[in-house]
Image 1: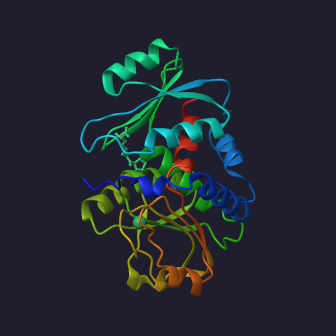
Image 2: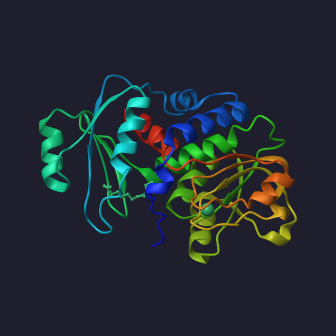
Length: 261
Ligand code: 1J1
Ligand code: MG
Protein backbone atom coordinates (compact mmCIF):
# COMPACT_ATOMS: atom_id res chain seq x y z
CA UNK A 1 0.00 0.00 0.00
CA UNK A 2 1.29 3.43 -0.93
CA UNK A 3 1.17 5.98 1.83
CA UNK A 4 2.71 9.41 1.75
CA UNK A 5 4.59 9.85 4.99
CA UNK A 6 5.31 13.35 6.16
CA UNK A 7 8.87 14.52 6.52
CA UNK A 8 10.13 17.02 9.11
CA UNK A 9 10.50 19.51 6.23
CA UNK A 10 6.78 19.21 5.36
CA UNK A 11 6.00 20.34 8.87
CA UNK A 12 8.23 23.40 8.92
CA UNK A 13 6.52 26.76 8.83
CA UNK A 14 3.20 25.22 9.79
CA UNK A 15 1.98 28.58 11.02
CA UNK A 16 2.72 30.31 7.69
CA UNK A 17 1.21 27.46 5.65
CA UNK A 18 -1.85 27.51 7.85
CA UNK A 19 -2.35 31.24 7.43
CA UNK A 20 -1.95 31.01 3.65
CA UNK A 21 -4.29 28.07 3.18
CA UNK A 22 -6.93 29.57 5.43
CA UNK A 23 -6.80 32.72 3.33
CA UNK A 24 -7.21 30.75 0.09
CA UNK A 25 -10.01 28.62 1.53
CA UNK A 26 -11.88 31.76 2.55
CA UNK A 27 -11.38 33.45 -0.81
CA UNK A 28 -12.48 30.47 -2.94
CA UNK A 29 -15.34 29.18 -0.78
CA UNK A 30 -16.46 32.26 1.17
CA UNK A 31 -15.96 30.44 4.50
CA UNK A 32 -12.89 29.84 6.60
CA UNK A 33 -11.71 26.41 7.75
CA UNK A 34 -13.48 26.63 11.11
CA UNK A 35 -16.80 27.59 9.49
CA UNK A 36 -16.50 24.80 6.93
CA UNK A 37 -15.78 22.19 9.63
CA UNK A 38 -18.60 23.42 11.84
CA UNK A 39 -21.20 23.31 9.09
CA UNK A 40 -19.86 20.04 7.66
CA UNK A 41 -20.11 18.15 10.97
CA UNK A 42 -22.50 20.35 12.94
CA UNK A 43 -20.01 20.47 15.79
CA UNK A 44 -18.01 23.10 17.61
CA UNK A 45 -14.81 22.25 19.39
CA UNK A 46 -15.16 22.78 23.13
CA UNK A 47 -13.01 22.27 26.18
CA UNK A 48 -11.68 18.81 25.40
CA UNK A 49 -8.11 17.83 26.17
CA UNK A 50 -6.20 15.92 23.52
CA UNK A 51 -3.49 13.45 24.53
CA UNK A 52 -0.95 12.99 21.74
CA UNK A 53 1.18 9.86 21.79
CA UNK A 54 4.43 9.40 19.85
CA UNK A 55 4.55 5.97 18.18
CA UNK A 56 7.85 4.20 17.43
CA UNK A 57 6.50 1.32 15.29
CA UNK A 58 7.56 0.93 11.66
CA UNK A 59 9.54 3.92 10.43
CA UNK A 60 9.38 5.35 13.93
CA UNK A 61 8.90 8.81 15.32
CA UNK A 62 8.82 11.64 12.77
CA UNK A 63 10.45 14.66 14.28
CA UNK A 64 7.99 17.58 14.40
CA UNK A 65 4.97 15.27 14.04
CA UNK A 66 3.58 15.25 17.58
CA UNK A 67 4.71 18.83 18.21
CA UNK A 68 2.86 19.86 15.03
CA UNK A 69 -0.26 18.10 16.29
CA UNK A 70 -0.01 19.92 19.61
CA UNK A 71 0.36 23.22 17.79
CA UNK A 72 -2.75 22.48 15.68
CA UNK A 73 -4.82 21.31 18.66
CA UNK A 74 -4.02 24.54 20.49
CA UNK A 75 -4.62 26.63 17.37
CA UNK A 76 -8.11 25.07 17.19
CA UNK A 77 -8.75 26.19 20.77
CA UNK A 78 -8.41 22.85 22.54
CA UNK A 79 -6.03 21.84 25.28
CA UNK A 80 -3.40 19.24 24.52
CA UNK A 81 -0.28 17.47 25.71
CA UNK A 82 2.28 15.04 24.36
CA UNK A 83 2.85 11.95 26.50
CA UNK A 84 6.33 11.68 27.91
CA UNK A 85 6.74 8.08 26.77
CA UNK A 86 5.79 6.60 23.38
CA UNK A 87 3.57 3.64 22.50
CA UNK A 88 1.63 1.66 25.10
CA UNK A 89 3.28 3.40 28.03
CA UNK A 90 2.35 6.75 26.50
CA UNK A 91 -1.23 5.59 25.97
CA UNK A 92 -1.52 4.59 29.62
CA UNK A 93 0.00 7.90 30.62
CA UNK A 94 -2.34 9.98 28.42
CA UNK A 95 -5.53 8.23 29.53
CA UNK A 96 -4.47 8.35 33.19
CA UNK A 97 -3.77 12.07 32.86
CA UNK A 98 -7.40 12.63 31.82
CA UNK A 99 -7.18 13.01 28.05
CA UNK A 100 -10.66 13.18 26.47
CA UNK A 101 -9.30 12.48 22.99
CA UNK A 102 -6.31 10.35 21.98
CA UNK A 103 -4.36 11.10 18.79
CA UNK A 104 -1.62 8.81 17.48
CA UNK A 105 -0.20 7.54 14.21
CA UNK A 106 1.83 4.65 12.91
CA UNK A 107 2.79 4.31 9.24
CA UNK A 108 -0.66 3.02 8.21
CA UNK A 109 -3.24 4.77 10.35
CA UNK A 110 -3.39 8.16 12.00
CA UNK A 111 -6.36 8.17 14.32
CA UNK A 112 -8.26 10.35 16.76
CA UNK A 113 -10.40 8.58 19.34
CA UNK A 114 -12.84 10.42 21.59
CA UNK A 115 -12.89 8.42 24.83
CA UNK A 116 -16.06 10.18 26.06
CA UNK A 117 -18.44 9.40 23.18
CA UNK A 118 -16.52 6.46 21.64
CA UNK A 119 -16.24 8.10 18.20
CA UNK A 120 -13.13 7.23 16.22
CA UNK A 121 -11.83 8.55 12.90
CA UNK A 122 -8.91 7.93 10.57
CA UNK A 123 -6.98 10.76 8.98
CA UNK A 124 -7.67 9.25 5.53
CA UNK A 125 -11.41 9.59 5.79
CA UNK A 126 -11.40 12.99 7.52
CA UNK A 127 -8.90 14.35 5.00
CA UNK A 128 -10.79 13.02 1.99
CA UNK A 129 -14.05 14.49 3.24
CA UNK A 130 -12.71 17.96 4.03
CA UNK A 131 -10.66 18.41 0.83
CA UNK A 132 -13.59 17.18 -1.25
CA UNK A 133 -15.89 19.54 0.65
CA UNK A 134 -13.56 22.48 0.01
CA UNK A 135 -13.35 21.66 -3.71
CA UNK A 136 -17.14 21.40 -3.90
CA UNK A 137 -17.68 24.78 -2.25
CA UNK A 138 -15.86 26.65 -5.02
CA UNK A 139 -17.76 29.92 -5.48
CA UNK A 140 -16.89 30.25 -9.18
CA UNK A 141 -17.88 26.70 -10.17
CA UNK A 142 -19.97 26.62 -13.34
CA UNK A 143 -21.62 23.22 -12.76
CA UNK A 144 -21.91 20.35 -10.28
CA UNK A 145 -19.27 18.37 -12.17
CA UNK A 146 -16.19 17.58 -10.14
CA UNK A 147 -13.06 15.58 -10.93
CA UNK A 148 -11.54 13.23 -8.37
CA UNK A 149 -7.98 12.13 -9.14
CA UNK A 150 -6.98 9.07 -7.13
CA UNK A 151 -9.36 6.61 -5.47
CA UNK A 152 -7.25 5.29 -2.61
CA UNK A 153 -8.45 5.62 0.96
CA UNK A 154 -8.47 9.43 0.86
CA UNK A 155 -9.86 9.79 -2.65
CA UNK A 156 -12.58 7.19 -2.12
CA UNK A 157 -13.80 8.85 1.09
CA UNK A 158 -13.92 12.23 -0.67
CA UNK A 159 -15.69 10.81 -3.73
CA UNK A 160 -18.27 9.17 -1.47
CA UNK A 161 -18.89 12.47 0.31
CA UNK A 162 -19.36 14.28 -3.03
CA UNK A 163 -21.80 11.66 -4.37
CA UNK A 164 -23.82 11.91 -1.14
CA UNK A 165 -23.97 15.67 -1.63
CA UNK A 166 -25.39 15.45 -5.14
CA UNK A 167 -22.30 16.25 -7.21
CA UNK A 168 -21.56 14.66 -10.58
CA UNK A 169 -18.36 12.86 -9.74
CA UNK A 170 -15.88 11.89 -12.46
CA UNK A 171 -12.83 10.00 -11.32
CA UNK A 172 -9.62 8.45 -12.54
CA UNK A 173 -7.10 6.07 -11.04
CA UNK A 174 -4.56 3.89 -12.84
CA UNK A 175 -5.62 1.06 -10.51
CA UNK A 176 -8.50 -0.69 -12.30
CA UNK A 177 -9.75 -2.34 -9.10
CA UNK A 178 -10.06 0.98 -7.27
CA UNK A 179 -11.87 2.47 -10.23
CA UNK A 180 -14.27 -0.46 -10.56
CA UNK A 181 -15.04 -0.39 -6.84
CA UNK A 182 -15.90 3.32 -6.98
CA UNK A 183 -18.07 2.83 -10.07
CA UNK A 184 -19.94 -0.09 -8.46
CA UNK A 185 -20.27 1.21 -4.92
CA UNK A 186 -20.63 4.95 -5.52
CA UNK A 187 -21.93 5.20 -9.07
CA UNK A 188 -19.23 7.66 -10.14
CA UNK A 189 -18.33 8.12 -13.81
CA UNK A 190 -14.86 7.23 -14.99
CA UNK A 191 -12.82 9.98 -16.55
CA UNK A 192 -10.03 9.48 -19.02
CA UNK A 193 -7.87 12.16 -20.60
CA UNK A 194 -9.39 11.52 -24.03
CA UNK A 195 -12.79 12.62 -22.74
CA UNK A 196 -11.93 16.27 -23.48
CA UNK A 197 -14.00 17.36 -20.55
CA UNK A 198 -12.66 20.17 -18.40
CA UNK A 199 -13.43 20.81 -14.75
CA UNK A 200 -13.60 23.87 -12.57
CA UNK A 201 -13.43 21.78 -9.37
CA UNK A 202 -10.69 19.19 -8.85
CA UNK A 203 -10.03 17.08 -5.77
CA UNK A 204 -6.66 15.36 -6.06
CA UNK A 205 -5.56 12.62 -3.65
CA UNK A 206 -2.52 10.75 -4.89
CA UNK A 207 1.04 10.32 -3.66
CA UNK A 208 2.27 11.33 -7.13
CA UNK A 209 3.35 14.59 -8.73
CA UNK A 210 2.05 15.91 -12.05
CA UNK A 211 -1.26 14.06 -12.06
CA UNK A 212 -3.09 17.14 -13.35
CA UNK A 213 -2.78 17.94 -17.04
CA UNK A 214 -3.93 20.86 -19.18
CA UNK A 215 -6.73 18.86 -20.77
CA UNK A 216 -8.49 18.37 -17.43
CA UNK A 217 -8.90 21.89 -16.14
CA UNK A 218 -10.73 25.08 -16.91
CA UNK A 219 -9.02 28.38 -16.52
CA UNK A 220 -9.29 29.76 -12.96
CA UNK A 221 -10.36 26.39 -11.57
CA UNK A 222 -9.89 25.21 -7.98
CA UNK A 223 -7.58 22.34 -7.09
CA UNK A 224 -7.98 21.01 -3.56
CA UNK A 225 -5.37 18.44 -2.58
CA UNK A 226 -3.74 17.00 0.54
CA UNK A 227 -1.37 15.06 -1.70
CA UNK A 228 2.32 15.40 -1.18
CA UNK A 229 3.87 16.00 -3.62
CA UNK A 230 1.36 18.33 -5.23
CA UNK A 231 -0.36 16.91 -8.32
CA UNK A 232 -0.48 20.31 -10.03
CA UNK A 233 2.65 21.22 -12.01
CA UNK A 234 3.52 24.83 -11.09
CA UNK A 235 3.69 26.01 -14.72
CA UNK A 236 0.17 24.72 -15.41
CA UNK A 237 -1.08 26.32 -12.20
CA UNK A 238 0.31 29.62 -13.38
CA UNK A 239 -0.85 29.38 -17.00
CA UNK A 240 -4.43 28.54 -15.98
CA UNK A 241 -4.43 30.82 -12.92
CA UNK A 242 -5.47 27.91 -10.71
CA UNK A 243 -6.47 28.44 -7.10
CA UNK A 244 -4.72 25.78 -5.03
CA UNK A 245 -5.62 24.57 -1.56
CA UNK A 246 -2.80 22.35 -0.35
CA UNK A 247 -1.39 22.01 3.13
CA UNK A 248 0.21 18.97 4.80
CA UNK A 249 -1.60 18.47 8.10
CA UNK A 250 -3.77 21.19 9.65
CA UNK A 251 -6.85 20.92 7.43
CA UNK A 252 -7.04 17.15 7.88
CA UNK A 253 -6.56 17.35 11.64
CA UNK A 254 -9.25 20.05 11.98
CA UNK A 255 -11.59 17.73 10.09
CA UNK A 256 -10.65 14.73 12.29
CA UNK A 257 -11.37 16.60 15.52
CA UNK A 258 -14.66 18.13 14.36
CA UNK A 259 -15.83 14.71 13.18
CA UNK A 260 -15.50 13.03 16.59
CA UNK A 261 -16.70 15.80 18.91
C1 1J1 B 1 3.80 8.65 11.74
C2 1J1 B 1 2.83 9.38 10.88
C3 1J1 B 1 2.78 8.80 9.51
C4 1J1 B 1 1.74 10.37 7.98
C5 1J1 B 1 -0.93 12.74 7.57
O1 1J1 B 1 4.51 9.22 16.21
C6 1J1 B 1 5.19 9.55 15.22
O2 1J1 B 1 5.94 10.54 15.22
C7 1J1 B 1 5.08 8.73 13.94
N1 1J1 B 1 4.82 7.35 14.25
C8 1J1 B 1 4.00 9.34 13.07
N2 1J1 B 1 1.65 9.32 8.79
O3 1J1 B 1 2.76 10.96 7.75
C9 1J1 B 1 0.45 10.83 7.39
C10 1J1 B 1 -0.36 11.62 8.37
C11 1J1 B 1 -0.15 12.71 6.35
N3 1J1 B 1 0.63 11.68 6.29
MG1 MG C 1 -0.12 14.25 -5.25
